Length: 148
Image 1 (cartoon, one colour):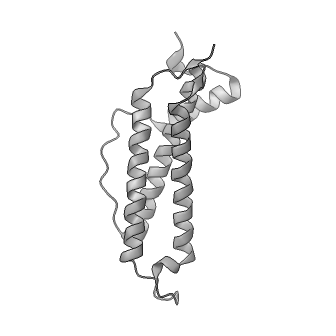
Image 2 (image 1 turned 90 degrees about the vertical axis):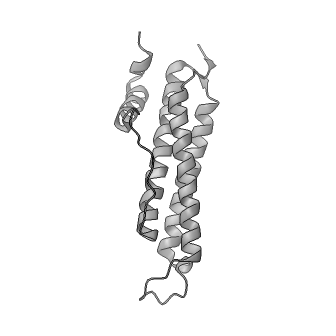
Image 3 (image 1 turned 180 degrees about the vertical axis):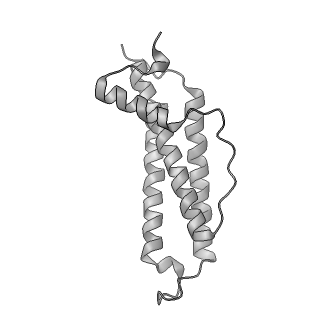
């Protein structure tokens, strides 16, 4: 039976929150590198924005944020079985968390600081999301949240 996406507001809200923070962190880091960062002294470069390593970091981050956004949009409008919807939502949660973590790591690396993000207390551990997705894809197992 296919039906409109079941309501998973807390998981989708967590994904949206992480995605929003990832975008903000990416913009803050871009601004810092453009306006304040100095190139590595031995690089021979005049500006940090010309460093191929830094350019590559921003390319990677942009891809991660874009993938998270696409998976979030997919989950938000997903139509399928409850199990398929749960898997799509878990994929969005993981991608958003991954994007946020990657942005935070690069922000620390390039700016020397990382914002204090709110506590993630009360969320399901991501390792459970990976296991649920893998077990559904590999073995066709219905996510435990949907079992009666």
